[in-house]
Image (cartoon, rainbow, N blue to C red; front, side):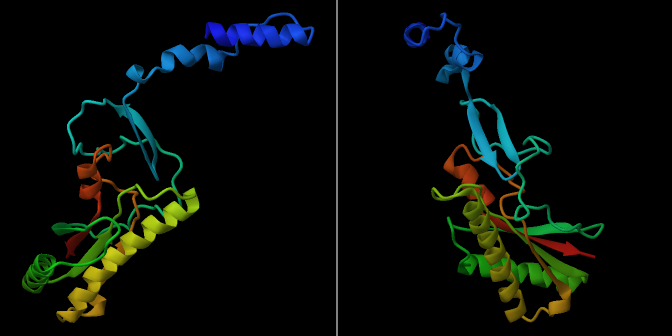
Length: 201
């Protein structure tokens, strides 16, 4: 800060102007040392800087934890579910993938069997983790929305293959708008790369 002040005064003296105090933003540099910051999580719902660096991971995201603002049309909440909807399964995916494993297909078959026993509809909601490669923000949103839709579609195709009727199926995708975990470690990202299967009566 002292060096910046000295340099600023030197420049001002050459220009024939009186010395001036540093702008407030520059004066704040000392308080912005890394030790004063925790992890900052950025998602389609905004920025959350209230996480300490030593917090365990994965840390569940609680309602209202992320500040509002910065949400995209591609990162919207899922359409309202019917009263009494119950989550019966969660399928996790590899980074950028919408592929189903043999175990995933068995879980989907079990969800369908439960639906046959209880009736109603199956709703699938696809999700994505918030991180992507370095790219512009619009492309980032589009990539995350597409992968969340692909994950929901993969499960829907498997259910249709197993005999579920189209009118008994609702498919939705919400990009990275509904994280379960903060993503300051890879396990948090992995927990958010998912699709959820619900039974609606």
